[in-house]
Image 1: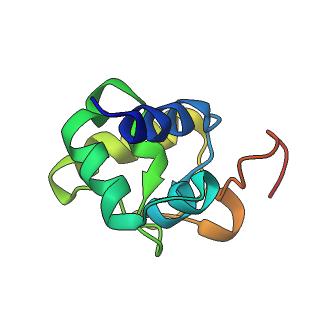
Image 2: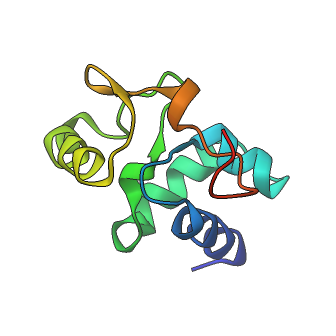
Image 3: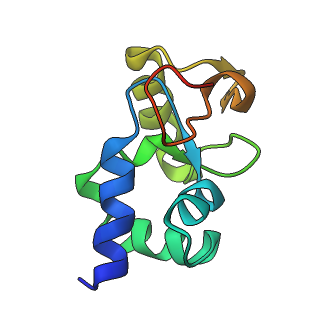
Length: 101
């Protein structure tokens, strides 16, 4: 695993339960890469971190093939949703504090 991947996974591990970041949010927080690079890291090494907390910019789950597992994790964590998407206004985490909106 390369250092960039390690940094991405550290950010994902720091996202509080019930909150999400988009792929682009993770890249912006790190100040490097972009959504596609974060997606590549997550598809290769993301299985060991709370992958359901990283979503597309519109709040849709990262993988349609894992939608039911993602929704179950969101329900268990109390993630605000709108249908089968994370409610980005209510659930987005800025990386600064547990209570930030």
